Amino acid sequence: MRTVNQPTLAPTRKLTAAVVAGAAHSILGLLLRNMAPEWYDPEVMAATLPLVIFAAGYVIKDNPNA
Image (spheres, rainbow, N blue to C red):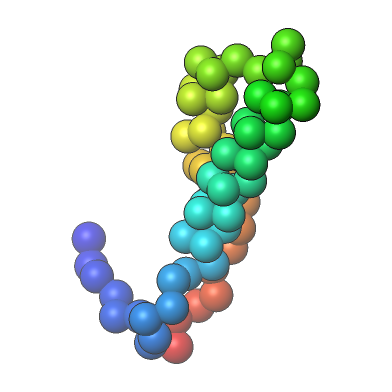
């Protein structure tokens, strides 16, 4: 595999989307735990976090490197 130099130090769109999706998943978990505790399950939240992050990174397209 060949490495590519990024034109800036800014993260790629895929990385940004994955981080935002992880943060949104965590916020959803906090909201569920506090507002609807009967729907909150820590095992389900822990199991779905990698899936949410992968899906966000898979769906978002990166811009071509300059």
